[in-house]
Length: 366
Image 1 (cartoon, helix red, strand yellow):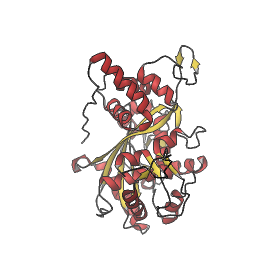
Image 2: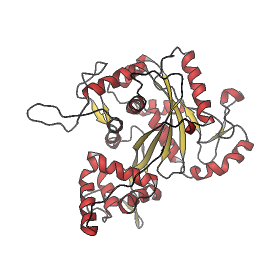
Image 3: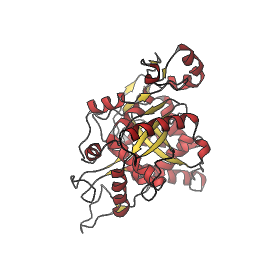
Image 4: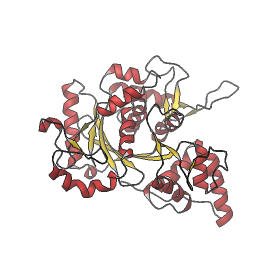
């Protein structure tokens, strides 16, 4: 689990930029992605500790080491993740995009009550589960419902006998970790280093939070530290007060339908309007996962071809979900509006076959 860090809410001007509604360029995202400070996966030393750059794994170019000895000792743990070279890069890219960090920070604020209680002197940890899913919702429905290629009008692109699905990174779940025993020595080392950096920069009131990001294949995780600013807390307080306007709002009476601000809607929504802390376009509101889906030109660099393991998670979610990724995906499909048509078909099909509506297995990650 390589620890990484990036100062994401480090100053007021950046917070204003994040609320401007102007998408960040691919060039800026790449630059911020490179700004992650990486430590040796074997012993935890940084570039600064060594006085020279760390060496990267020649295969995946993600895991870093201070010596051949550390690389050799870490290989049993790193080997499963090394084959998923593109996934760690996608995760870094997700965290390097300030637009997408806003709802993630909101999840931390809601989960740990940071508006009413300052917790800048203690490490806070959460788990973020992500997956690569089809960028075309019709492709997702075809896989989930076990349909033939192109039955729902999706674009068919084949290579040989197998169809190659274009995918995108999606957020499936945010789980706050409340058990202090789950905070490891590596977490504490990462937190202390980032706490010291924030204090040195004068941001004593900012919380330092850590997130373990897990990919759906269960073989790769990355620990990342970010800052939660006072300004973001003020913004989330307004979200709690006003809720989120639904982007499909078309009430002829002029009334606005709004959803309450919760962890789930923070994952779905990236929203700003005239009630926000900053002066921005009233029409600038986005749904987080749908925002990524709408990025057809991949300006956010969050698209990748789906692997067989990604497709298998979707199939398992619709048949016999037992693994964490499959249960999480089924939970999300049942919850998020974009999946409602295919979930309704899934429910009716299962009821017709078994006589009872499908249930979602309980999942306890704490």
